[in-house]
Image (cartoon, rainbow, N blue to C red; front, top):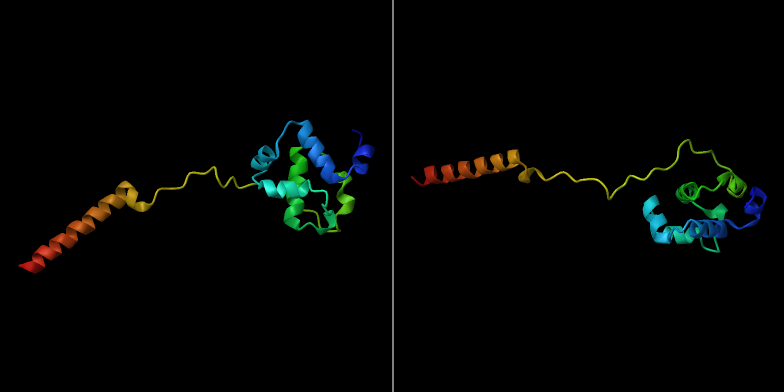
Length: 129
């Protein structure tokens, strides 16, 4: 498809056709972008209005176009005038980090807990005599 043909195809159709041509499901694309399936389906919806997108949605769209290796400059004319963003939105990979263990399950935490229990037991025995 040439650049001239791309402009005549509505963006939502171009996104859907390109994703399907790359044998990529909506679920796979959503997982790759760390977005919900619903958000990507909204970008491929026939009623997509580029002028009404929030800055976040524009970032999602830009990242989606980047994933599909589409030229976003062809559609910039449809966005309301705004200052360009200096960098791309990056996902934080919220599901791919290891949470630290709570302090009570660490060896130092256990030692302090045992020490406190022994001290409380010692005080209880001392008070009873």
